[in-house]
Amino acid sequence: MWQDTRVLVTGATGFIGAHLVRRLDGLGARVHTVSRRPQDGPRAHRADLSDAAATAALVAEVAPEVVFHLASEVTGVRDPAVVAPTLAGNLTAAVNLMTALTGTPVRSVVLAGSVEEPRDGLPPGSPYAAAKAAATGYARMFHALWQLPVSVLRVAMVYGPGQPDTARLVPYVTLSLLRGEEPRLTSGTRMVTWVYVDDVVDAFVLAGEGGKAAGEVLDIGTAEPVSVRETVELLAGVVGGPAGLAFGAVDARPLDRTQRSDIGPAERVLGWRPTTGLEEGLRRTVAWYAEHL
Image (tube, rainbow, N blue to C red; front, side, top):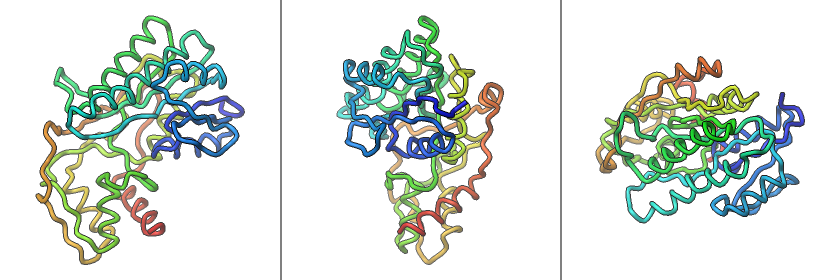
């Protein structure tokens, strides 16, 4: 399936994107990557996907058979100042890409959605969540009106080796404990759905194969959420050492909600289930950061 397949990966320098590119390279795909920043490599492209003309030119040049759209403006900040950048980075970019791909021979388009997208009629909890939810709505429209073979994988909280944003909970706590420092945390009561990065890559590869997920919006996570406190205590047990845990030192963000993933549809459509338990995934993550300190 993947040998010599022309694949375009947006957000290839990000956490999931970098892992996905390595997997696709190993499968023999001809992987084209795109970023707003200069990259090395014969199939590395530079483009701003919030620019419709630049996006159309990129698609025309690459003529991809499969597209994975992971480029995103990720932030949990609740501030009016981030509304415009998250709109451009998450919604405008996705719409420009889907517009450029409509009517082309592309076999499969897979968008990275988010567990933060609101459910059950609740308002979005952040500008990021609002933009991601809107992008999912547009993806469903592109499939229904113009038969674009697009699917959305609503990804839970991803963790694992090599996460570049070290302010995220798992790398922040891991690095603090490895350095003998006390991480400053919220109360830890929030329930979070975690998923290991290799399991996420498995899901994207399956969704990209043959377009069987076209028109679907699938949760990619784990069946049961785990509290932030339990997650941090597991990390502390893996790392060991004298450092304490400063729960309650940081205020919780407004509208933070319990995250849940219904992974039944992903198993039915893709044959996917997560295979890495939280404790094992945290052990692998800690081992990587310990080696790369």
